[in-house]
Length: 82
Image (cartoon, rainbow, N blue to C red):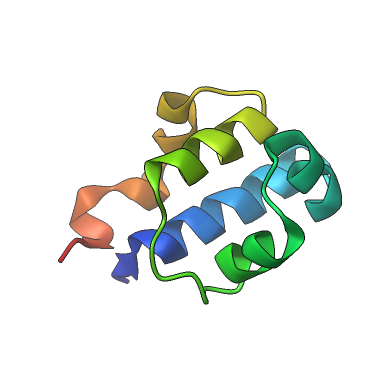
C-alpha cells in the first residue's frame, strides 16, 4: 500500500501514542501543537507536514526526528513522494 507522507506521519503518531500509553491531549501539551492542528494530522486532513511539525512531534515523544522517522512506515518504496 502506498501512503502519502502525511498518512505515514499520522500512522507513526498513532502507534507511538499507543506504545507510550499517551493521550492525544498529553502529546499536544508536550509538543506544543494545538488541538485543531493535531486533529488534522491524525485524521489525514493535513496536506503538508513541515519539518517544524516533525520536530514538535518528536519532542512530544521525547525522541529525535531521526528516531521518529526510523520506522517501516517511512520506507521510501511505500511512500508517494511527488
